[in-house]
Length: 384
Ligand SMILES: [Zn+2]
Ligand SMILES: [Zn+2]
Image 1 (cartoon, rainbow, N blue to C red):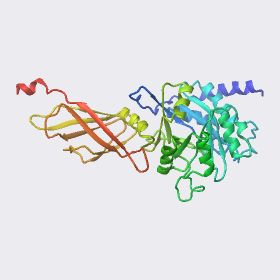
Image 2: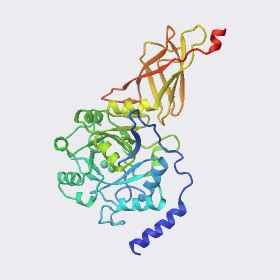
Image 3: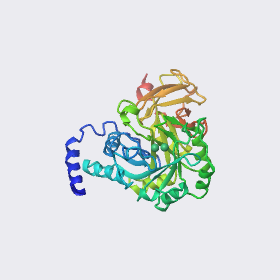
Image 4: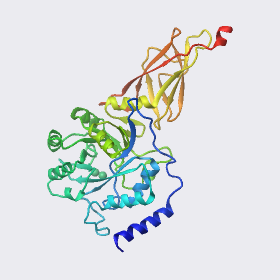
């Protein structure tokens, strides 16, 4: 069967099996105050073309169901345990199969990006390159030459799972001299602070990102099925990167990655540079004040959460609460009522919190201030 015939038969099968339930659990975050849109991206995934368990079309299907806007296919270049069964001298083949599947399904709003994982032992470690034109050019012996080849194609290059126990037995992320040289030369642009395959995150990697001005990334590094591994669709989600982009174009997404405008999302943790985490959190959480009841100076205030993240807040305001303690949750898509002891009748309420499910530095959470006007009392309050 020639290539066109293969594509045609793929199209027929894919259309027949298209699910009705797509997007029922889409990841959606509101735009940030500066008008950036928040794109959901998984930039590290595997299929049977390296050591994954599924055909690339399943990666596309999963990404569509999860409502991702960006999916990178990043097969190991050097680790090819299924090569005897699935010979593929062209290392772009996995990406091509994924794109054929995307076109056949007609999924709009999902960008599939070509990538590769340069897979070496320490001190080089595992390094991903995405936005590749030709992954074959990275298949060279010298790891530095592989990274340079990715950069020559305009690739975005990042260090994977720097706290992976086989390469970092104490679980502490560190850069080797090889990595330091890549950063000095502008060849390494990002670092994973969360990785789903090792089910881990790294506050050390986050601090490295801040110190070296690297882009902060969370990825699934999925090999099996996202639903089985992360309970997706039933309250769980794969670790991913939220990209704060000007629009949904590939150019904007790529620019945002190179500019470091990202937040890693792992379980309920949001990790990243403070300005990016704050932009996302402020898009998620808003407060709204009610009326003072009678002569009391205890103000009802609602905190609304417009995001698919459960927030845990610690009150750091001068004011205390009548109904809850200083540490409380705001469920995803939900709201929490606070009765704030303001002491006097205010026209504006200002509350400050430590957002405990965020990390903006080594063991450091985001400090957040939320304000809202207090509406004038209703007319009947004067009548009484
Ligand atoms: Zn790896
Ligand atoms: Zn990997």
